[in-house]
Image (cartoon, rainbow, N blue to C red; front, side):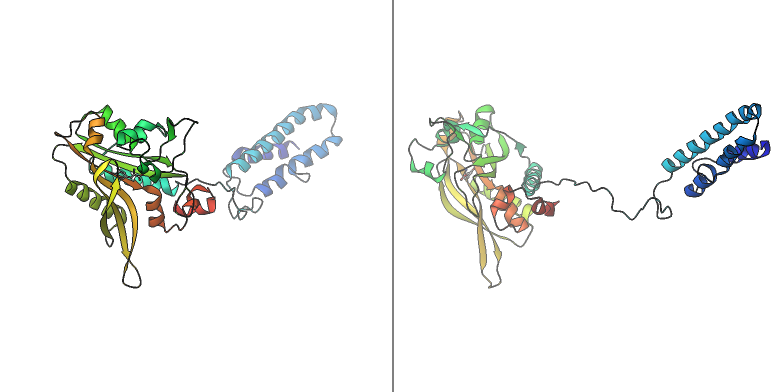
Length: 327
Ligand code: DAH
């Protein structure tokens, strides 16, 4: 018996968790009911109590060592195809990883494009007062131009609105800083409107440049640059005369792509113009010294065009099957 114990001690001494390749065999040999250690325990009944006490502690130590080796070997051996007691073919635990929303992707891309040509970031509140959203931008009280923007009023009075456009940030920026000004202001805007191409919440990116000797050709050049950077080559661009109270002259810019019939499909993507002198004056900037241009880009439109999204409402339903496609 002493020999058996000695040889077991030697054997277990040589083993380490890493060297135990076949854990099941190890278990059979040293731990299970038929194991060598159990065999020694079984033969105890034939021993007198003195010998039992003598070898008992040694065998117990062996048993403990075997168990520790077994536990550590289980821990150390990663599941592999060679270890059938851990079925490596079972599917792993699935973790959903998030992805950026298509509107965020487009907004980030726009910020990069304009950053490259020297625009910095400006911000304004989404709950805006009537003066910044309308009056300072040359929308006279009760002027029909206000109807172009179906407004959510925040309380029963007319004082506070959910901003209908990012153009109010123009006013805040001009009041805050002196020219030269060269900013973009992306953000959420709100209008009481809902169908396949209109959502009550949507996104715009406002641009404003105020400096000496700024002209319409600077505006066009900036927008050409942006269009090519964002859409690549192969798109047509056209300006149509338009009306906004805060710009004079005003234009809308369409982007066009050739269709199968050889014609061009146009889509409006932004409004723009030269900042109206009255707006500069409202913001304490001398229109005799400075000129400005401004533009407001519809971010949702761009995302729809870029990714071929047919209905703006898809952008706001948060269906992960839809959102997953843009990561
Ligand atoms: N704020 C206008 C709108 O939401 C868009 C716009 C037009 C912005 C002309 C501008 C601009 O900065 O110059 O309809």
